[in-house]
Image (cartoon, rainbow, N blue to C red; front, side, top):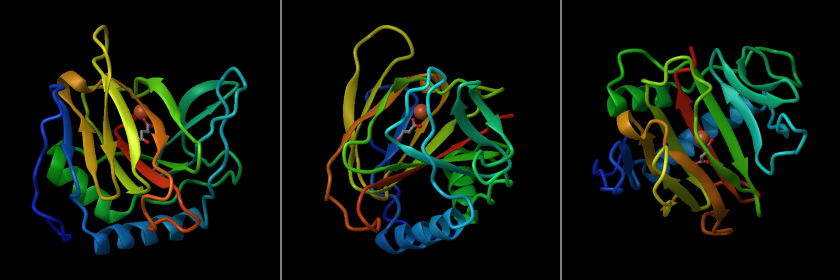
Length: 209
Ligand code: SIN
Ligand code: FE2
């Protein structure tokens, strides 16, 4: 890999296709990635989206890459411009493109990177990622900052379980788990000092088109 990591170990999550690499990014790499995020957020600030029904998300969002996931009264979709700045999204940090290549082995790079900012009581309800044109491509997720309780379960039926995602953890929804239901129950506020003013940043790489 082109970046430092801790020993590259994958944990069994009990859900076929839901892959988890706890602590993959060491502290220096987390700091470098956070810096990459901050320089881009300066141009594409976090904003507060709302559901198509008009309910504000508790999570703040922005995107990197050619396409960004947005939600408003017109629905969920991918678009090329920041909805507030009306400018193209910044590029995806190269480190994330390397991670995608090395961990997923997918033949094409991701074209969308959703950036979620959770503070305090922010959470995300159970959902499936299904706004992408090709749902065969994996979803790769990187956690920075406070630990989160990540809830997941199969696409249909069956119960859900939770796993803690800490700073530097990387996980992926692939193959049979690509349409797994998932969400964030809550943050363990103050569990990390990485993110200025506290909280958690999650980066989700997807192939939207
Ligand atoms: C998401 O499903 O969009 C975010 C999941 C996370 O924050 O880990
Ligand atoms: Fe999701």
